[in-house]
Image 1 (cartoon, rainbow, N blue to C red):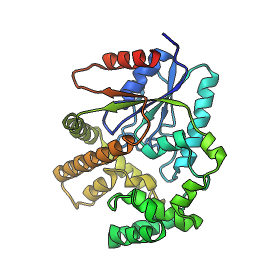
Image 2 (tube, rainbow, N blue to C red; image 1 turned 180 degrees about the vertical axis):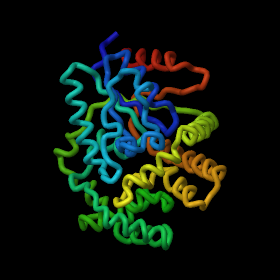
Image 3 (tube, one colour; image 1 turned 45 degrees about the horizontal axis):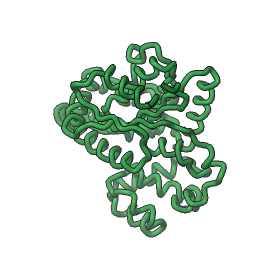
Length: 312
């Protein structure tokens, strides 16, 4: 069997077991895990972003997990540069980079490149968020359709984050997302990572059950207290990742606007909806190996299959 030389990517929807698989694979192939998650990069949010604990990391080196304060935002372009730098360092030690995460945009930035002017303007973003909350999605969607009808076709009105990001790009740079993607430089396209990508696929019912169980476990582990501490420690700052699923809902619970039972149900439903969007995104990506996950299959069996397929 041939040796494994490629960088690997373990991707899939939320609660699909990516972290567990990535760690087991890394242990077998002398690898190190690189987080590919738009929220796990933040510290002080370990429970709510499902960051692997020290115990769960099982001695495998992990990178880009819990390293940035939540008061700082990061673009897909900036994230991809961090990943490329870490991957280069790992390879210099003759280890294998094992990317792990569910962020489709960050994955695409690494495999296809992203426009050079990808940047963030928190003031513009906050204004657009307030406009969205006040008037709903229709007003902002109308704006996007008027300036970039092609890109608007790929944005669902209820995808608040992506809709706002598209308008933020236009208002901060003067160019539409489509213009940026069409004019991205040759060097940007070359600044990518050659990946062997493994996608973890679940039956919908099984994945939904995993999401429900994990939501319960996260709340039991102290997610609400984590949010309280976050609000206290960063009371004078804008916290971009608070838009992550569950955080706003927990804030409402803290403010006595909802019950614990309703909170859990809402997080469960929104996480399921998010998983559907992730699956649709990854269905459009070029995948090297799809692993059909089953609750009855052990992690060892799953990783045996992955290693065998990679080395064929």
